[in-house]
Length: 68
Image (tube, rainbow, N blue to C red; front, side, top):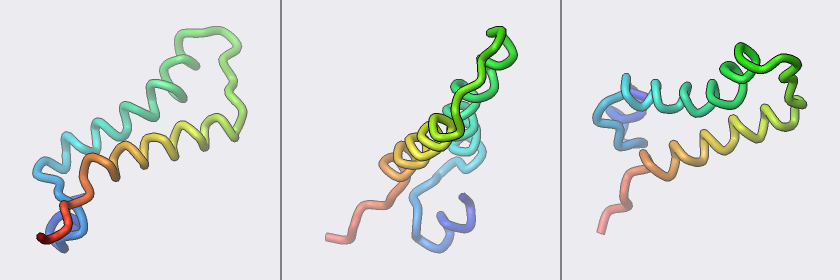
């Protein structure tokens, strides 16, 4: 994320925080329920969807504004 920020492809002032947010979105669906709920086993397509949604959220937040 830092390299994308430096290249001007993303507006990520705090890459560590952004990475934690991204991983948190995925872990909230994939990791934590497996640790807390017996038999939690989402389909591969559901995991893929959770990751795609997290990516779309990050793009919406960190895509730089186009020049005026």
